[in-house]
Image (cartoon, rainbow, N blue to C red; front, side, top):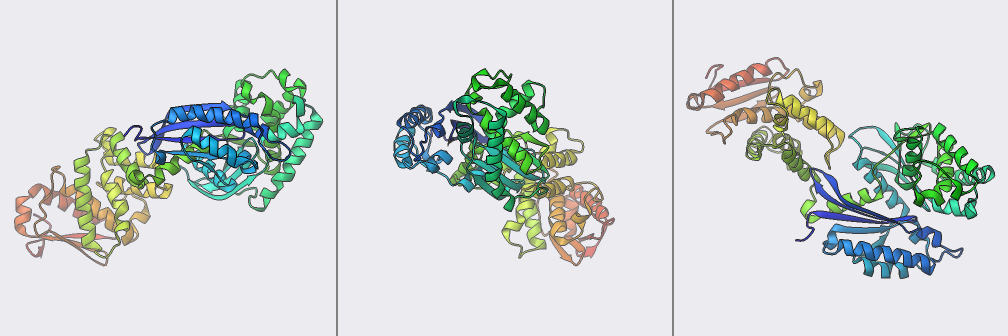
Length: 500
């Protein structure tokens, strides 16, 4: 099917319309194409909240161009979302009806809280894995979103009715910039933002991020003028504020890094950003790369029947990326599953998932070097991003992969503290050992059992004689467990024996 592996997000913002096309592979999106048009639809709302004919036509013309680019995409692979301007517009149905025809796909007007959560998802999708508490701020054309969260989960999400387009129109009419106008704009912004203090308090986050147009514009200006690099600082904002006041009018602004499409709305955005810094006692914000459209792309993958299991997609992506021998990985996964079922036959299938993932990924470190490949694999898992896995889950997988061979004392103490962790660990170690010849092992009458903290692997003397290398490796494994609170006994021919 044409474009079967591509997904597209259309963001109908108050200032700009954007189209992002991406390919989902190796557990993340690779950008294929990005289109942006400055439509300024938010500036076309009159006092009665009706979109002007000119504003609607600008939007329709843009959507027609986007529609040509999207021709042939499956309807399940495209999501178009509209934000604050169309939430407010009384004639939104007329615009959306015609716009959907031109685009070729439905247009969804999303609620403010949904917009905030999608923004957070988009921002975190392009951040390194971390357990840090995050504050994400997005100043749009007519709304500002504030989100608190951890990892990929938004915990508090707010959408407030103030933005760079609305504030520029209201407090800097005709492009006139003055210190008094900035003061009025900041006071008004703090009055609206004060609502956020009911849900978000200073100290609720470890690090703050600013996303989308206003943040990117301020960040670009500060970087181009040597005031910051990849961040927005309080000192930088004060410097930018003074530069705008000295310019007196928007058409007189001369600042490196300021794009022409931001000139008319930069003052409104800066006044809101200053109010946020004051209200939340911020000293700096990191400029984020992700935004609403990346969040929308991830919802498409999650809803795709062919890609509903993000964990499986992430694991397969890592296997492909690091050239894992898929046959051996599947072989080890099957043997490990068999052994874990012998130890805990009543364990629900979902609880086998960490072991399955670790078995499939146990050789990813081979791509770096064969020597100590288990340690290399653990490092990769600890420092990569993988859709569907939280940071603690990846850390646990890393421990399993690291513990697949060698001494057990290198593992964290909790890995040997209880059966929930020890059973899968032993099953993986034995599976890797039994598959050492890179072919399916003959189990014969091998049986694994447990009593308290004592494991017993029992088989016939004929099995040990037929597979002397496997029996020798099992003897080494028995010795490795002797230095832990758990013990592994080998029984050949019905009796305890430490030699094959």
